[in-house]
Length: 267
Image: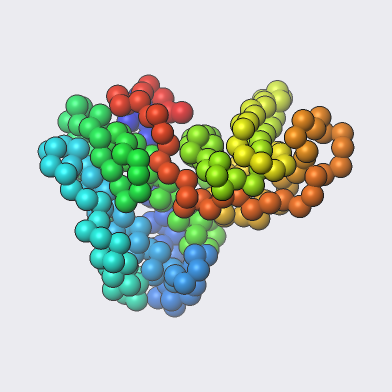
């Protein structure tokens, strides 16, 4: 299975899980705060629906070659979210289903050559159109957690965790960094696996499993279970102090140096 088929299958499953959660909410639940400051669950669900429509714009750009912005403006995006936030759950669910289906159809109908076309979202840098699939899975998985409705970081699928931690590391803001290294250490099938991301900036070393690190990097957890060590520590010395805050996740751009042609797998 190539990356396009794999990501579309992953997106379909992710969307299905999100729709199932929303279907179980009441109108009163939607009026409750989400985990994002200043947004109710209604704001968040509307945002995910409008994000699907915005990515259809970028798919159209890739397919036709006519530059089409993701959103008309930040103000227009925010106005659409505010306008839709207070709708009853029945309308919200239908909107999310329909917008997600439109995007899935747009992805399915993409000509092969169009996947390599360069497009640009609201933040630079530009990226090949196949990466829109990665972005949409990120949107559904991260914001599913943000709903605060029973789906948590522990529910993230393994491929999503591996890919998103990779992209966060290759996009790491060294100017805003509070750590020098991040060490991913896990046991899989009885074998210990270790990966070290070096030269991230100044500060201590943070070590843990990929899932806990991703939750911390994206600001979706306080990082309970992560270890803080001094640079060069072999693990025998005491912790090097409290866990620092990571750079703002919103400051991490799209992964750079992406292959233009859809790869066999990513990362």
